[in-house]
Length: 142
Image (cartoon, rainbow, N blue to C red):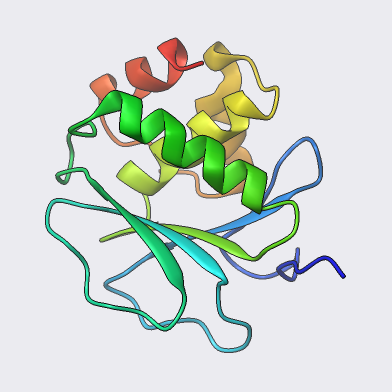
């Protein structure tokens, strides 16, 4: 059985392949209903423990990830796991770092790098990917 998110739920991004990944801001309460089975947390400091499997990437607010190789591996893992598990990607507010990560995952799923920010803004959040260097990071990701 394939685990999935409700595709109509707020914060759920449908990738071109049909896979679903939920993005959210950790400063907001956990949404009601189904919990993630795996989460990728993008924060400047280690997040609190959660009841599901998670990976933490050191990624300060408004910046880029500390380790690009580790980031690429974690984003590939999130995409792969989204085929059979409920995957969540989250930062503090759910827009800049989360939007950047979701746009990079969209690139891995086949969206051209030059179009990935627009894709995520249209299908996830209009203000996703907040800084010029985050947009450049997405464009060059792959």
